[in-house]
Image (cartoon, rainbow, N blue to C red; front, side, top):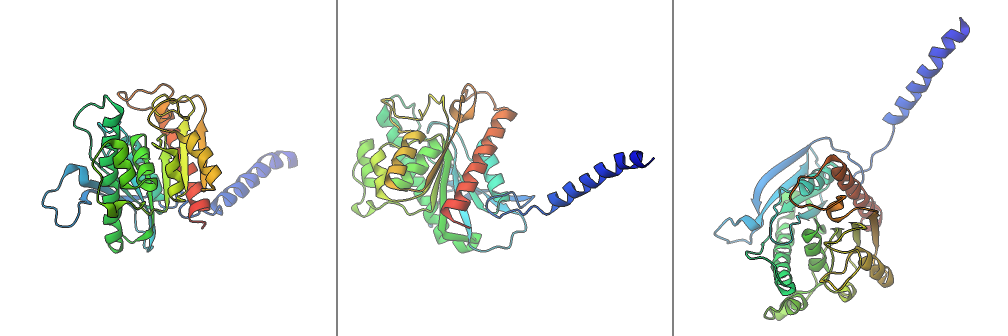
Length: 308
């Protein structure tokens, strides 16, 4: 009888202890999912003051942790992929990261930006499209700095983030001045006053790249990169293509002493798909990898950028 009781009592005690320990696990704001619900405000505009039209490429969706009363929260500006030809702020990955980072306590703005109206047959066409998209990203940063009190965000803690073309935009906006980017794109020199590098707190680069590794010398903005080892769209390392990928950025950033981290999903292609296909919808396993990428970036921001 005694042994019979022990058989059932001991496992019961163990379950109780495990449950109690689970309830005492501390969650950390900005690193863990601390907010169960998120509020989303759709189709707001980051267009400059005085703009008469509500242009589609200036729209953004705002993701906020529901019932959060904190002030001076970090802001992440998320930019979608699509090769500068297609894509919107409603892209599955952008919605997933915007929501999950808002659950961590961030304010997230998923933005549209200018897209090319023609196919990008040549490298200079891609660079021109990148230049105009970067101007939109910089306009968005300026807008949120001007309106930081309206959204309870810290104007000194703005992060640029994106996947594929969005990651490319984030890197060029953070590390290159307008004059150098215009020159590379074969565009007229912009206003000489625009030769300074944008000041942001960090970059989340999901399988994007930078046009010139030397631009990393312009500033010390921390970078976290995630990519697939078999990516053939934006190769991890430079292979006579337009962009230097995440592995090149990681190596150069280490050389320059720029805070950075790199996560490589071995055996996966662009967008962390097994075999990249921009037409078919992504499956659960890909979304799981996207969430892993987000968690990796969140830990980097928490420990290396803001050092909470």
